[in-house]
Length: 213
Image (cartoon, rainbow, N blue to C red):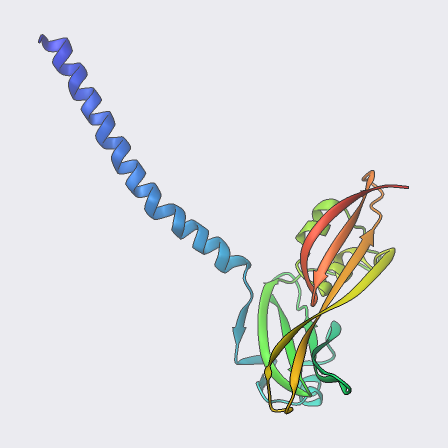
């Protein structure tokens, strides 16, 4: 084999080795990127929240939180347990605080009058007095508060309760976990299709299109 053949074999070997190293690197990097994206979009919980010079933490009463942090920007209530013959025996209130674009939105979860969880969501935003909603804005909303603040109230709503049995608890009987399913219909002026946003206990889970009238 002459010099050209030897050179060709050396180049092929180099390309193969580089490709193998690239694939090994890609197998390591892609899962890390996926993990980073999941962490970035998943709400994180914390045990306490500082409001100015005051601190609120798990176990606080709603009135104590309001005294230290002010009125929430949005409140939503969801029953979380029902019993046959008694109805709702446990409920949750979700308080949303939107501090603006430079800080994260906080969701404070109260159960039966006690603060049980503090969620850190995505970055806050400036709320318009007359929100104008387009498809991009609609898709950026991840929960009921963001949907209302960014797009305003829908033109129509549907509400459905779904329940799942749970283990017998301290109520002495089998309770059920109610799940609030809402469908919010938006009529976007710039789009020929209306949009149906499905929420599950206040979280956006789906967006579908419907033909305009």
